[in-house]
Amino acid sequence: MLLNFVSLSSINLLNLLAPVIVIPWLLHTLGVRQYGVIALHQYLGQFVLMWVDFGFNTWAVNEVAGRAQDRRALAALVGSIYLIKLALCAVVVLALGVLALNPQWVAAAGLNLPLLAAFAALGALNSFYPGWLFQGLERIHALIVPTALARLGTVALVFVLVRQPGDMWAVPVAYLASSVLLDFSAARQLLRSVGWPTLLPWRQMVTVAQHAGQVFGSRLIIMIYVACSPLLVRAAAGAEGVAIYSLCEKAIGLCRVPFDMLANAAYPRLAREYRKTFAQRLLQLQLGAALAVVLLLTAALHFAGPYLLPADWAHAGNYLMLYSLALIPIAAHSFMGTCVLLVHGKRWALSLSIVVGLAAYIVAWSAGGWLWEDPLARVITAMVMVEFGICASRYFHSRKSGLI
Image (cartoon, rainbow, N blue to C red; front, side):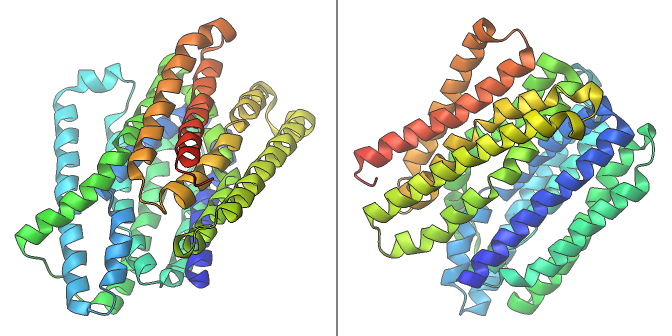
């Protein structure tokens, strides 16, 4: 269990570090505006990833664990999941075809169709990565080396291929090449562990799709949020605003890794024996650590920001300081969602908290005009309020249920 947790955390960290390493190079080589265009299409590729995943990356872990000793049943489950994923990919191809026939829609959204298709393909490829399988089998450590090599390959290809502002096309090529390498390596591990995939009877396959669809439904609002947020940023602040938003999100994503790791580490213990005092202490630890990170990040940006950021982009540090406030509610609601509500099967409360968060977004965006004239500051303020809204809702349900 400990090896599985450490391995999963290491893979998540590797997936976060690679973009953080290449972003400064892309900003320097492509320029802020071109990088903003890349970042916008990357977010839409993330939407495709969530669509094709269809909740399997969460739901299938327990199913795999339950079939770990029955190789034939496991092969049938794996084959059925991949067949469903291929059907979902067909929907993506159909949507891209519709956009190709209506280029005015693409132009109105400020998108580039070849770039969108490339990142959509990247999202689909990443969805075929069988992390859920090896997590259920508790063999996720087998993917650490391939993941590390693939991420290093991404960084190396970006540095080699992206040499001037016109090399924007090389970014998705670098990511696609490393994704193909990673999927090929994972497929070899899959064949060793499971054998050639087969298929379940069609009625059981429909049942599998229905169960995964319930998880997918609870994440549908998040998918819409992931897709719409960068488009809203672009409409409010242009491609440069998307670049700043991407930088802030990557930095906060890296800072939240320790909090997610602690929540994932505590989950098995709380699932076996839930102790309210233990949960309360961990929540206090999460909040204290988050406050310390925010203060340290603010101090670092205030004193070292002028030396770390380009002179014409120094204002990005102010947005990052504003966005860092989201770490406090993130630390709390990631713990309450994973270790409190999920342990007790209160998935409806998780979904409701997201609805509350988006309601807070709408209120903050509407009221932001009274606080900020800068449209990007309004967007980031609204995004911070999403996290506070989610946190407030999960805390309310945790307290009401007597779990904290």
